[in-house]
Length: 636
Image 1 (cartoon, rainbow, N blue to C red):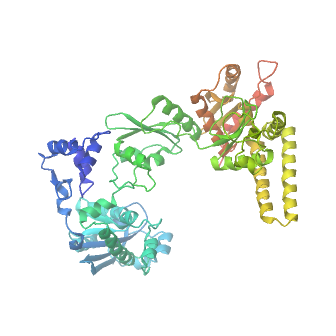
Image 2 (cartoon, rainbow, N blue to C red):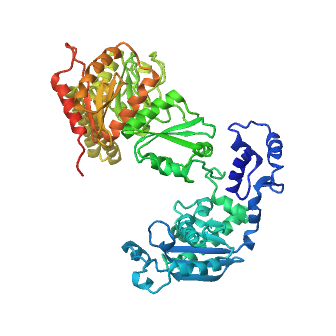
Image 3 (cartoon, rainbow, N blue to C red):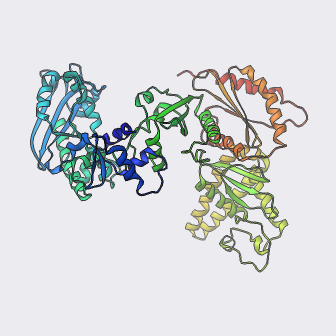
């Protein structure tokens, strides 16, 4: 336990509060204000590697005691390198530029071109203006390095995006000294992320623009070092305004996460670097082996690697997960869709503490017309349900669904209010009725028969029967265009523009109904999708709004085994209702179809045979042909 706390404090030169250390040990430390001081004094007080700093109430690793010195009394060497652009190596350095800062002033500088021994890539020549002829007579890095190390001395290094420069500098230090540079270093890019919140971009050009610094001799080592030094002077002023006056506090600031606490990641980076570049699901585990989180990925290595960096968009919950995750295990799957479906199953089954049930599902929305009531209501639903209702969608998000809801209420004047109605002539209608967007059944302004006609007109637009739907769409389009033209003739152009937006919405609704309408109306379909290597076909059967069948097919002939399973599921679907966990897979599939359609696979309607207990042979042949096509890789 002490070693764990030492590792944490070694990454935080300014130390940590007792409560912060206690939170690192216990997931739920409790609320006893006396627990942290007493527990940590007993645990760390007798260990010489730690010491208590009473002036600011923090525990500090004794190795960082030397860093507790004022920034004003610290000498900095601002370094910038021009390189070959290849992997960090001692011989990849093309130019070294350095500027020394002492007592808040630039006192001297170091500049040297270096012959890398290989021709420069054209884009490096264009970027820096350095060409092979300029380097031909310059010394190699083994001759330059001792001079640079002597110039650097024990001063603190400063660079913009220091991780890049330190990669090359440490490669040279290993090559000529057998160990990395011992100097502490600051990164002006990381500091700017915490100190310059008004700028979304923190590159050298952007920061120079914020602070009004001229971009002289840009993309040459000494010129960039000088710009970095000028930026650092402004950052020092901002640190002073925040009460940061010591070097250890500045080093700690650059490692803070968005929540103000240090960014600490215990995931094994070498293991993450070896993860496959394939779709799948990943699981994070705590130090004691407890499952913490399940996630999906289109590319497992890239997704898990995104947790290793101190990204500005990490939420507080994600940062807490990263601080407690010590191991990752992955499961490679055939596609991004299969990964999403398997993630949903794993979350419901394993219930990891950092997953919120339902949050992993895609953000989609449907329009729902409830048919159970005497006066059906039009509303927005997150998923397909099992009750007596008609659905349209899926829509990309709730905003898009609300736009379509507004269009249909204006066209058919259906109610959107919740609850069952008891019509009363003395009832005062809501705003929807007062503006004419509802026929006001609550106030008995319309009979149930008349309201049913409104519902049937709307249903004609939603149901998957092509002639009726085409007729309803044409009638709605004619109604809107006539109204638009009338308003234009009356010179009411703003009102006419609003109606034209409704015409555009209707066209979008028509396209959606033509491509996806049958999914939400019939809710029976078969999806065939190839794996990334085209060795397998993934089959998904949705029956009555429920993901009822999942299979992996290695050959087109295996389609035959799916037919009786689909038939059995159709019969079973008539008997059972939808449970909450039934619709997860359908929501994921609906979102996938919304975004991809048949670009990455094939989708077939499953119309139940009326008289015989099997599908027509022609339809099964079509499934087999699609399977054969999907198993054949497309030539590049």
